[in-house]
Image (tube, rainbow, N blue to C red; front, side, top):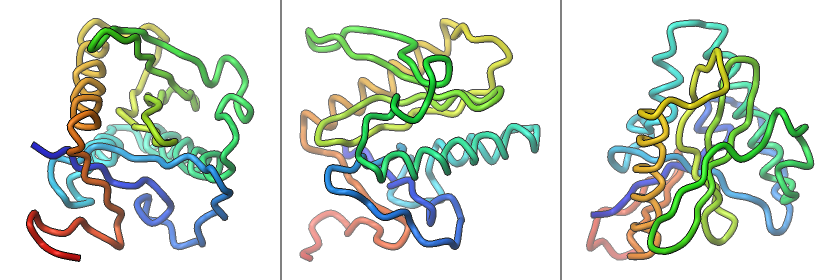
Length: 173
């Protein structure tokens, strides 16, 4: 089964300003979707469902900055201090260790995983009044990254952006 991933950029965030200039070797930000439709983006749905306007604004501000940082191609920790960006969880899958990272903006934690070919999987935006992840949060994040890793290995990632939805299966370009 394919895993649909929406490119997170200014258009996906609903901004009408020009995208930052992507340097060679830039990072590409993607978030999982339930189907090949930007409206089905789990990350953006979660942010839209946050109860506090302040939390929604903080999450979008964190993603706004992350879009700019990713376009630079430089390592993410260059743009954040150690308290803002660091690894939060390690787990094993298919005999390899994998790491979940987070970027903090106020009470918001944007959780991500580094994939192959400079792809960053944005797994969730958590409202955290404390730093520790619950067991349920850790399990959910691991399941999401494992599904991504399995799809990556099987070649079943379906990358798309707001302006270019994926072609239906079997369609010729």
